[in-house]
Image (cartoon, rainbow, N blue to C red; front, side):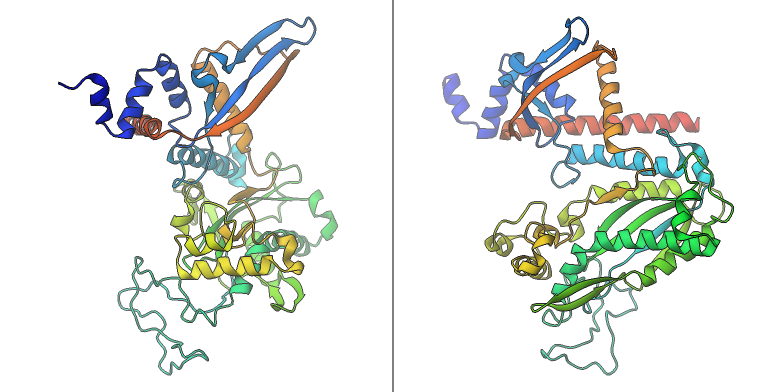
Length: 469
C-alpha cells in the first residue's frame, strides 16, 4: 500500500496544485476572491490598505488591508477586452460596451430617451487599396478573373480564377507581395486617428455650409457626437464603424435644429469622406504619401425596432460590443502582445502578409522621420495606435462610470456597510506584486468562470420566458 505522500507524487502537477489549494486553511476566502473576479484568467495581485476617515473628527469609519487575505494579497480583474486572453473579462467588457453604445442610441445612463428622435447614422469608412488581394467569393464567382490577365514585374499573375471560401488561408493575402505597398499600409494605420479627426471636422464644416451658417458658429447651433470602433479586415487593414448623432448645442439633452436631418448628415458624411486628406512629408525611404479614406463608404440611418427603414439601433450596439472583445488572432490584427525584437516578428504565429507588415513597422520605426509614430512599439497592431473603441465626450456614459456603478452594486449586494459621507476622506496605499494563476488555480478559476457564465445564461432564459408569458 502506498502512503499518502507517495500517492500524491503519482498525480500530475496540476492535480497536486489543486489539492494543495483546496486543503489550505484559507481556501474558502481564496475561492471568494476568484468568484468576485468572475473567474478572471489573469488576475492582478495587489497588496495594501484602504482607510476611510471622518475629515472633521479623524475617526476611522472603515479600514481594509490585505494582511488577513490568502497570501496577503487581493486578486482583482485584469480587465482585458480580448476573449483570447481572458474570456470572463472580455464578456464583462462586451456588456459595458453594449450599454455604452446603446445609451447613446436609445437613452439611459443619464442620456435622455429623446436621442432616438435625433438624426443617427451607422457609418463605415474603409481603407484604400494597397495592392490586390485574394477575396472571398460566391459559389459562382472567381477571385479576380481577368480575360487578359498578364503578369506583374515580379512574374506573378495579376488575376486569380480560384473560388475562395471564408476558410481559405489565401483570403486577404496579396496576389504579389513584392508589389504590395506595405509602407503605405503601415503609415495609413499610423494616421487613422488623424484621418478621423479631420473627417469629423469636415462633417461639421459641411453641415454648417449646407445650413448657411458660419463654420465657427456651428457649436452654437448643433453638436456632432459619435462612438467608433476599429475593425481589421481579412487583408489586415482597418475599417472604422461609427455611430454618428446630431444633437443640439448642449448635447443629447438638447434637440437638434430643424435643418439637422438624417439626409443632411448623410450628405455631410459623404462629402467629408471624399475630401479628407493627410499629407506625409517626403522621406527618402518611402517617398511622399497622401492618405485618404477608401472609396467604399456606407452611411445608413438607424431606427428603433419595427420603426421604418434602416438598421436597428440595438443590433448595432450588439455588433459593436461583440467586435471589441475579439483577439488579434480572430481579426487579422497581429498579436495580442508587444513585439520587442526582430526575432519576435519572425517567430510570431501570423501569416506571411502580417509578418511583412510587422517588418515594415520595424523598418520604418527605425527612421528618424517616423520616430514620433512609434511604429516599433505598435508593430503588434500593424502600426495602428488608437483604441479599439473611442467616443466623443457627449455621446453617452463612460467605462469608468459603468464600472463604478457595478462596484457599488456588488458592494450593496454583498451587504458591505461602507460610509456614504461627503465629509469622509479615503486614504489608499496599494502596490502591484504580480499577476496570473498557478496551473491548478487556473483550472479552478476556469470552472468558476464557466459556472458563472452558465448561471447568466439560465437567468437570461428565465427572464426571456417570463417576458413572453
